Length: 356
Image (cartoon, rainbow, N blue to C red; front, side, top):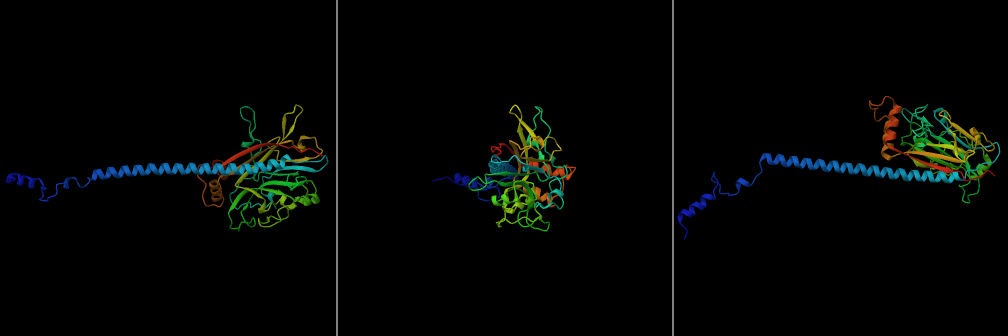
């Protein structure tokens, strides 16, 4: 039997000072300091996780953009290589290849271009650097060149188009800024993008129009491009004004080429551009003069925006954002955004065809 003293001692230990019989009441709650410490640690962990997630997503977007740009560049350069390797000419007075840098708005009349309103790719020298300064080794690099407002308008005769790969036809490559659908007008609500177009004229139409790539038969009298659903995308007029169906790559903001011939030692000599001011080369079949000679090697380059870069450029050009104070001109701002969100790809292509 317990003694009464022990019983009373047990009951006393089970009471709190306020008379509440809860032996764990002193340990059932956190102090304010403990809550603040826990909240601080939680916020720090959340911030760290947010930073890690943001960085991972940014890296993933950059990798996706780089992959898309590389795939697009390969598609463009592979097709251009097939076209140029089979380029041909005859020893006559026709112009079998033409490369023109169109760097003014008036030069783009009837090319299906949307020129303006407001900001767009800088013209009149703002984007013109066809022959960049040489590096420390005295080498000019086409990847550092800029080919004007619309890039190089390249036209030539080739045979790698028809199913039997034997009938000569005229192919044109050019960069165009226009709404993605419909006509190139300022009241067209469709998104405006830069794109590279490849126009291959049907062989019978090329035969009828002739093999002089700058002949008037390959011109256009309208700035309205044919739609992507139309079958009229292999007409001679598409050499000047490509159809929506002639689009080969989106988000191309520069496209250019250098032309070379062999010298007496077998080395390459660049004939276009031969100077910063050289903006045109028309190769005449029988010419042996560098200024009008048919090339044997062509260096080509293409600058491709990421999707994010294309959206940024579209917002700038539509006036949805204002120029930051760090850029003194619209041209500097435009190129700063483009260079930060684009990649340049280049390839050297040897023309395999011979003069018949």
